[in-house]
Length: 305
Image (cartoon, rainbow, N blue to C red; front, top):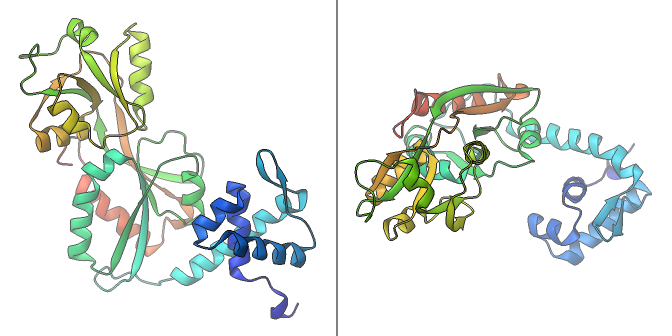
């Protein structure tokens, strides 16, 4: 085949994204293009492959059998190009120019990211860090090289993923230092009667919910938050309490002058680990990044790492 007959890279990126998101509008947003431009590209790809590839349905753009058959080879090509562009025989952090993408929770944005960023800016000034969410796409992102590491409690990651324990987490409760009804300790009776802020996200939240069900505790939830942003200010300005992992709890307490209480509910602890794909186990840059994380955060636990 003449190289002029090969599809453009942008068409392969379009195919890869559209197969996942099933929306021309969302693909246009992610590629930074107008919707008419994406429609033109899709028409070119359809003509090149002589197949509709995606058919409009009430649930979005559904792939045809031909698209199902071609998505694997398409992604292999894209991954080969990524590895080709990023290839380095050796990795010198002092001179390297590279972006590392790390999947983490919003709690880690507060507890881990500032210290990691400070270290990298000192030791590797040409390195750019990008924080991404932990979600259903994390395993594929690690495998494809879209993400370099995932840090957190992620027990659902499957085969081909290496992991290394950093520290253990137990659970604590946060309260206003001037709370009118809390003094030395927070007991189970008071835990049941006080108003709570519930965090609905976080990879360890399921452990808390299981413990509450097991102990037959129904909290008086006054406020639900999708993450930890603003939690410290809310606890500081109200008589509400929050139950959360120790690392983020102690960090928020220090910043907002809050009181950390032992959690009266017996909640199962969990390990925070860093995860990477076997394909990048020996890759020099990935090994350096993992070493930085271990150096900064591996311990028996605690906000200091």
